[in-house]
Amino acid sequence: MTTGPETRTHHQRSQAAGEVDQVDQVVHLLELLAADAPVAAVAAVDAPADARDLALRIASAREVHRQREAGLAALLDIARELATANDPGSVLDAIVRRARRLVGTDLAYLTLYDPEAGDTFMRATDGSVSAVFQSVRLALGAGLGGLVASTHKPYWTADYWADERFRHTGAIDGAVGEEGIIAICGTPLIVESHFVGVLFAANRSSRPFTREEVALLGNLATLAALTLVQTRALADSESALAALSEAHETVRRYADGVEKAAAAHDRFASLVLGGGGVDDITHALAELLGGWAVLVDENGQRKSAAGPAPATGRSGTDPLAPFDALPGLDTGRLVERDGVYAVAVTAARERLGTILVGGLTLGDSDQRTVERAGVVTALVLLFERQAADARQSARNRLVSDLVSARGSREERLSLARNSGFDPQQPFCLLVLRGDDPNGHRALLISASAATGEASLVGSHDGDVVALVPGTDADGLARTVAARIGKRTCVTVAGAGPVGDVDDIAKAYEEAHRTVAALIALGHRGKGAAARQLGFAGLIVGSEPDVGEYVRTLLGPVLDYDERRGTDLVGTLAAYFASGGSPRHAAVSLHVHVNTVSQRLERITALLGESWQQPDHSLELQLALRLRALQASTRGGSPRG
View 1 (cartoon, rainbow, N blue to C red):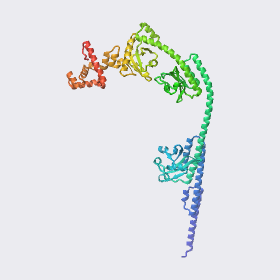
View 2: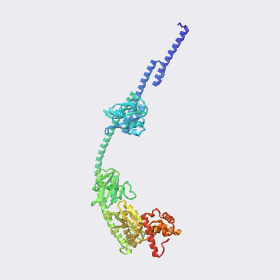
View 3: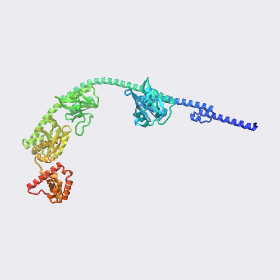
View 4: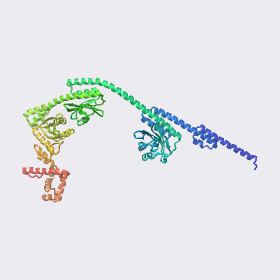
């Protein structure tokens, strides 16, 4: 077919236009490469295949080069950061934080090798949200991490759950599943053929790991392993230097201690020769050592203290008193627990107290100083005890004279007032009896401490007797028994109030019988007055108050009858007389059984639910009987 001139011209113009378009596309590719456009943008250009393939290779090579440069720059930054770290914990945190950012994953974590257990354990994480995952341990060969740990080679997977190259275990799969991990890459931390741990980068969605990323993570792992080993070596060096410095300091302290020991010896000797007491010795000990010092007596009470020592509790018992039970304390040598040192103060094989020292660390010479203070304190306490025994002997004689009514009234009043006690002011008499037959002296000391300085405490016929200001004999007996009972079992009986010196003997007889009754009734270790013992109190009391006993038990019912003109007391007596039968009581009272039931309900409201219990019932029946006897002796009726 022959074409005309116009057709050829059109074809030539179209061909020329197509060539211009291709040139434009190639130019566009060059512009994208010059602008450092991403590979995806280059691939989207509709350019000739050869030109586009060449441009893609160039862009990909530049992308790889750029990633390598970024990786190297990041490694340099990491190296600088790790070089400034001197704590292994902060090094590990920096490693996982940088690894996550560098590889661009959802999380990164690091496990360390435990040579004793033969496995690896989770040490640092970044991006983790599962507590189970953060505490998992990986046995060698188990899971992807165990495979890396056993082979010392990197492994990675785009889909953990579908990968069968490693052994899946329930514990590891459970932790990985709770964290939601899909893709994992792990590289070993090795220094001079020594396996240190595994560094991981992981994703919660499927993603492939390129060889460049694996290599980059491996470089970071190598750098991290070196830094970690260097940090540990630095820490070991610092520990060695600290130990050397401590040894030097020990030698210096020993030399200083010899001088301090000589000064302490002179100081203690000077105090004793000058008539100083245990307070002076305690303060001197605290000044010599630079800490605090406390002297606790044989009853566990603080006798003296110097420096900011632990506070004394409300009961007066020192919180440091449990040191008395420490093994080895009775040897006279210093013992230590929780930074507090203790030495027994003994004389003639008897423990007089304990010296406690704290707030500092004692060297050998300082320990000998404390032991020397214990010996000196024992001597001073022995002198003080002899003087205290002399004073207590005088008080014993006075108390014995008062309870026995020996001498004239004026002589007894004068002796009591000279001792600091006024028997013409209201007071109560207590008799204390302990379980330990050999603890009489200790009970005297405890009674004096428990009753206060205003009291007069002494001994009479084997009993400890205390004359205590106040009017509530039962309350005082209970209080004293509770205070002393924290250290030893003691039974306390009270009598009073006593208003005159001539009434002391009678009050003592009542309290003496009451303490025996308390023990016989099984109330050992308690405190009470005779009137609080119910019927037993009538027996042991020196002047039984039958009317008060009846009023205490039947008062609410008596008052109700008096106000309402009823006879609930008679109903109560008929109820008990009929063996607790409302029907029989109704017959004897000539009323309907419902009336008796209503009266019994009223009695329950007045006396409480316990009035039909055996103990309460017995007391009520006895009170009714005594009331009837009182009425018969007066020739009246028990009604009302």
